[in-house]
Image 1 (spheres, rainbow, N blue to C red):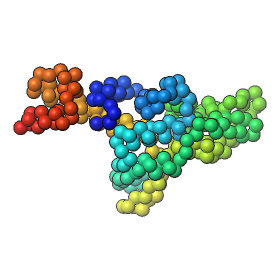
Image 2 (cartoon, rainbow, N blue to C red):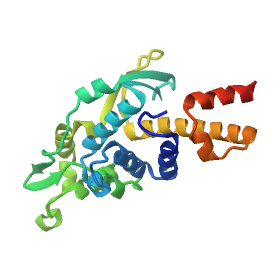
Image 3 (cartoon, rainbow, N blue to C red):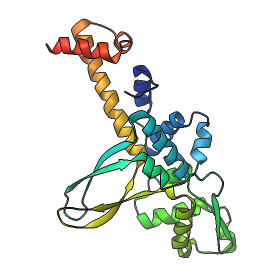
Image 4 (cartoon, rainbow, N blue to C red):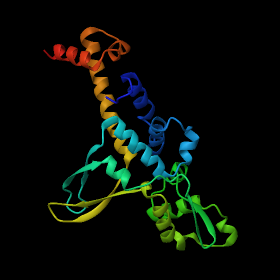
Length: 237
């Protein structure tokens, strides 16, 4: 169970996010992670700042230890990863001030959630990268007649330098085939999957106790975890 939040609050969060697009879901989690900011302000935060807020929130909810799995892209072996939020946070930095850069006289800003939403339906990776750069361009490139395609590599490097937590990359090495690769950690997706498991477990507990005793959901959620567990043990017995 998430500390500092009641079972009813956990289910309310799950209900709000279960049918949302992953980008909107990350922003929903961001509201809980940064209650000091308005939803509109969250949408404009650099992606790395939002990711760091979600890492802090994940640590407060489930601790610093993260267990995750990913398949080797070469042989398909399931690789188990052990991560630490403290180390991930130490390897990046907040980016609330240095959010703009210049290439060949054009000004750009690092991507935010609003920018990702614009390219969410784009299937072609190259087209998505160019569209994202266009979205982040603060100057009128059409007016200057400049081609942004030639700036993609330099822009990517500038964005990574200014906002390293926007894409948290993990180095992988397969023990079976020795193949080395990298994978991006989607902290929003990871955090949501953990919340989803807790919420569905809680719903199943409500279901079992409601069938056994005829109690309502609010009555069951009002029980402490210890009392709920004790009643469930008696149901199983």
